[in-house]
Length: 222
Image 1 (cartoon, rainbow, N blue to C red):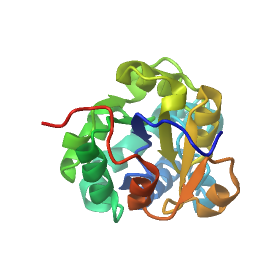
Image 2: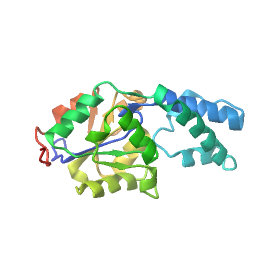
Image 3: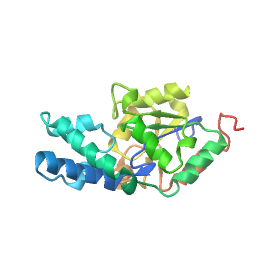
């Protein structure tokens, strides 16, 4: 990727990038594995699954009991979502100011769209997001580029006109395959991997994006 590029839109991952859902996700893994498989899963192993769909993950662990694992995971996740989820420091400022400058913003996530909307609404972030590409939006999911390509289509921009901010291996591979500049979210749960991955930029704080973006975006703000 070139260091200088024309940016017309900002695309975000959700979990581990906008919302701090690490404890919720780890708790969901612990609960589902103990309930269905009667065993534990190491936190480090669970962290490595971030960004991949539940169906793919659970099928990999147990094709026969994948459905039960998903059901148990969602049972815990939905019951404890609002109490365990928080928004990362600086996210509100970043989203609000990017919106104010006139840049359209999208979220690309392997989470279901309704839960994505709920999480954004919970912290008053939904008004800054123009489109969401969730689990239901595409047949194939991250690390495949299809979700990111769908976001580009909805935003009506080319791959070299966007940046994608994420925190996981799946995000990196998705961005590379879609030929979208990847910005590593160093505040997420995988800072060691983010420090070593192929990235156009690495940022320590979401508000650092304001130093990368032009002062005016393509949208006229009324």
